[in-house]
Image (cartoon, rainbow over all chains, first blue to last red; front, top):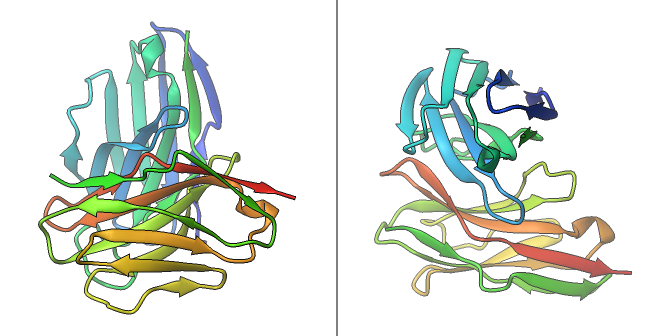
Length: 118
Length: 114
């Protein structure tokens, strides 16, 4: 299995809703990432989990809450979002966030979850 | 600060021709990785090619090759025999060990004309 699977593919939510984005990989990768991508822009890093611990939080508003239940799963809990949070949310994983092996720093991306906040 | 610059917002190439996408970066690090990722309209980011900074030899992957000039901090991507399926947004990316982060350029949209 060489994939990162993200669900749902599309999500529409109101500003008072609570929803979650899910990401799963079975490649044995120990680092997982959330990126936010606006149209025609590069991905912006939000969070990094390394060995199931949050290692980087890029000053993301608390209405976004990441969770890493185990080494294969990564969730992004959404609450009280704003319309400007509408974007493509990409999950990625890498073999080892800090390693130097041949595959250590290659990001494997999921297909993304397209979020629309009304 | 680490920055990655792609100066070509959009480029076009005729099918079967060759095109080169430019990327420059700024870093004080001596050891790092450089990548080209492709994002087609299907939106999934796909790794095209990877280069370790300590390797002088330019990486190649089939029709894709890079021209890595470490002193000039330049990392261009050459696509030979362009195919319609190559049409996508291409992002240059830099990985910094010390900050454990990937830095992406602004992207170049590649159009392939039949």
